[in-house]
Length: 468
Image 1: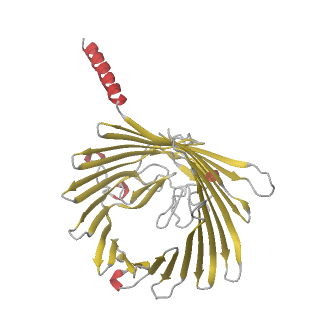
Image 2: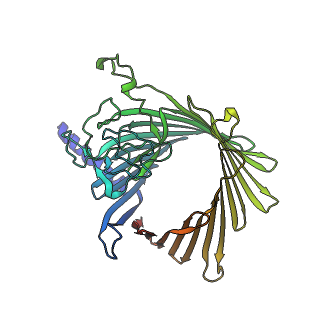
Image 3: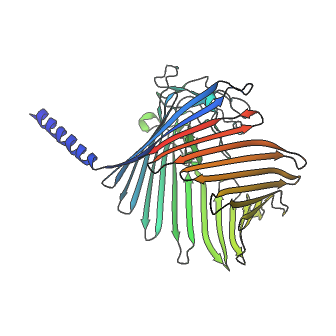
């Protein structure tokens, strides 16, 4: 009897679920990216390495709840899956993410050396994300040491935002695999150099960092922002065990969990029955931004960051207008504001079609780099075209000239850029690129990018997309 009741209840639940889903609003997009890399440039016709990747994004909204899926596919199979949930509970906004991805390694990093297979962090050994023809999957789903293109759990992020009387309180909690391979790098980030010679074991976890097994840590970012009566916006953020940017293949996330916030650095005296080793909570950084200060027609923004055991850094940004003729923006950057020293001064002056940017590295009031940009519209009445000419000089003289031309005819857009670089006495052609895009009213899009250098044709990308 109970089994029959449960069967009837399950059938009614499924019917009700389908009824609700039938009223859901479904939106999203499908993008297909094709990358063509010539094997060489020794002859007119050469073999092309083809990398075919696709991305499906779907959002289902029903009864104030939005379920999202961001799915990436490549030649090796599923590359990542990001499942999200967004809703509002009164004044509380909730954004929840589950991130799954396939771990990848790089057979040859572009900056000099493969690094160690155990995830050795060698700062500066990678200039950008590893090229596709050097990217190899290293996921092992059953722990047998054999790569089987497995997809593993990378992180969970949940952000709660509460708005009360004009004050916004935000808390971002991150539970993350701090050992998950990263094949890209940027300023301030250490890439994980997995060279593809070992598998990344997704079947288990441990408490050892920088090895081939997931190790999970916890980070949290608390922020508060509001606006004064006079219009000044104040934002403060406290990061615990989190800083920088975390990346998986083709996706990035603000804030990354510190590897020191794992059980390896916790209390080793606790036994498993006592709850195991506890992860430490370390103060990572404090951010204070004050924006919109108006003094005598000058707008001032002040951004300050404090990191333990490091000097206090700050950026002061001022904006004003000179007699309605030119807009001026000056950024004063200091890596040690307590010593009243400046590390960089950037000044931008724009008036009509002309803009000028001056950069002073070291804050000694001697400009090491000056960039002038002239932007104009050719034949604006009939067939307009946007022409931009950029000139850059350093202490030795003119070292770079860039010509850019943009043409739009209905749904067709064509852009081309040519770069000359070298020394003041001799500028040589460095590259020419073409970009073609078509956007139709029906949600269909097409794009293609071509690049050429003195060495021959570079990588070509073709993008096809549909929005629904």
